[in-house]
Image (cartoon, rainbow, N blue to C red; front, side):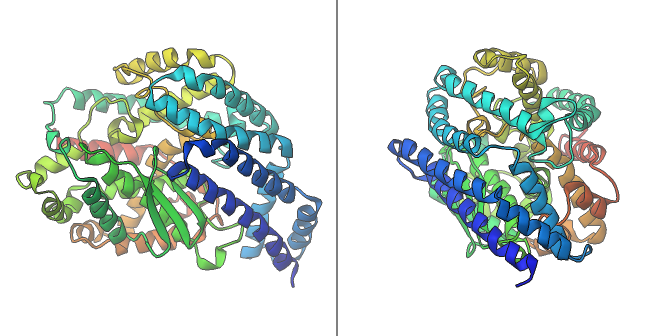
Length: 495
C-alpha cells in the first residue's frame, strides 16, 4: 500500500468509532428511555476516549508525515492529508481525559435540559450548564486564541473565522435588518390562522416526506424520526438521518423543519462516493452546511413559485385548507412577527435571534454573565433585540439544545448560512435562469445538480472561504441577503 492508503486504513478506524458514537447519540435523542442516561453517558465517554487516543497517537503523527511527504501537492490526496493534519493538530490540544469528561457531561446534560425545558424551569438545568460553561472555557484555552476566548470555540466550526469577523458581518447588516422588521411590523396584521388548526401528524409526516424526497433526499440512504429538537446526523455518505418535531395544531414546524434538515442531509449525501470514509467527506463548515438547509427551507420552500405547484397537493391532504388562496398562503407562511422561538422565526427576524445568542455567549465565556443570571439577561436582551419578553424559560433561555450539547460557538454559523444561501442561490440562478420556473413545476433537479457539482461533491476539499470564492468570486457578504429580504417582503406586503 502507498503511504496515503496506509493512513486511510488507520483513519477509517477513527471514522467507525465516531459513527458508533453518533448512532448512540441518535438513539439517545429519538428513542432511548430516560433511565438509560447514565449508561449512555458512560458508553459515549468510552468511545470518545478511544477515538481521541487513537486520533492523537504517535501512529497517526507518523502516518501523516509519511503521506504528506509522498503526496503530489496538487492532488486530492494532499488535500485530504492537510485536512487530517488540521484535525490532528486541533485534537492534540485536548487531553483525552478532558474529552471523555466533556462527552460524559454532555450525555448526562441532554436529559436534564429536556426535562427542564418541558417543565420550563431553568433552575433544574443551571447546575449542569455551569459545569458545561467551565468546560467551554477550558476548551477555548486549549484551542488557543489571539484576541477573544470565543475565537477558540468558533474555529471548531468555521475554520479561519474570528469573533471580530462575525461582529463585523453582523454589524454590517443589523441596522438594515432592524429597519426592515420595523417597517413590516407596522403593516396590517397577516392572517395565518389557517396554519393554526388541527393537522393529523401522520398526514403531516407523509406530506413533508414526499416533498423532501422530491427535493432529492434519498430515503434509500436516509431515515427520518422524531426528537425534541430537530437535527441531522450522518454515519457516512450512505447513512444520513434527520429528525422532526410535530405539533397537532401548527403546520409550519414539521413541514419547514423537515425541509431544513433535508437540506443538511442532501449535502451529506452529495459528497462524492470516493470521499466516503476519508477526511474529505461531509460538509466543509457549519456555515456552508446551514446555507444548504436555509436554501431549501426558505428560498425554495417559502417561495410563491414552489407553492403554486405544492399548494393543491397540500389542500388534497388537508381539505380544511381548500379555501386558502395561493396569495394568502404565501403571505401566511412568510408572516413577519417578533416571536420567541428561533427555529420557528421568520426570515426577517431570524438573524436577530442569532445575534442575541452570539452576544450572550461571548459574555458567558468571559464571565461577564453568570449562569444563574442567564434567564434575566436573556429576557432583557430579547426585549432589546426583538421588542418582546419571553413569558417563561421554555420559550426563552431553555429553547435551544446547543448548550446542553456543549456547542458554544456554534450559533453564528446559522446567520452565516443565511447569508451564504442567497449568495450561492444567486450563483446557481446566474448559471441556470430557468430555476424559478423549474421550481414552479415541481422540478428541483436543476438546482440540486448545480449544488452537487459546485458544493456537495467537494466535501471538505475546500474551506468555506475558498468555496465561496470559487462560487461567487468574493467573500461572505450580507448585502445580497438584505437585498433578497427587502425585495421578497416588500413584494409580499405590497410595499
